[in-house]
Image 1: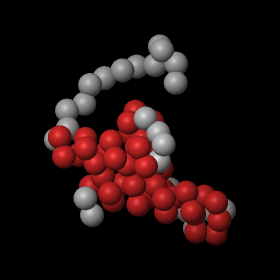
Image 2: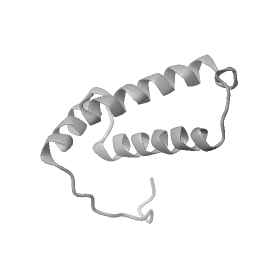
Image 3: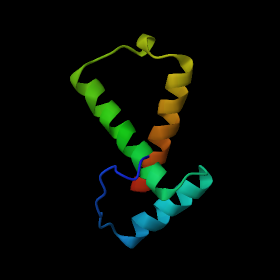
Image 4: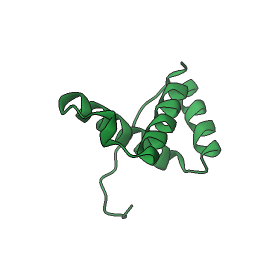
Length: 79
């Protein structure tokens, strides 16, 4: 990530920030990197809702990555 990338502040409940901090540490990422990974996954999931693809289109590694990312999002949401 370059220094000239756009920046913005986000307000979030302290409980979510604590969960995010824990998940980021577990994944050995910065909080910023964890947020970006979650947003990228959210975009991909929502794009797939608009442009359907079959599970056959995903490689085994992509499926595993998707499962991990979904698990992270569920932890962030407290599910």
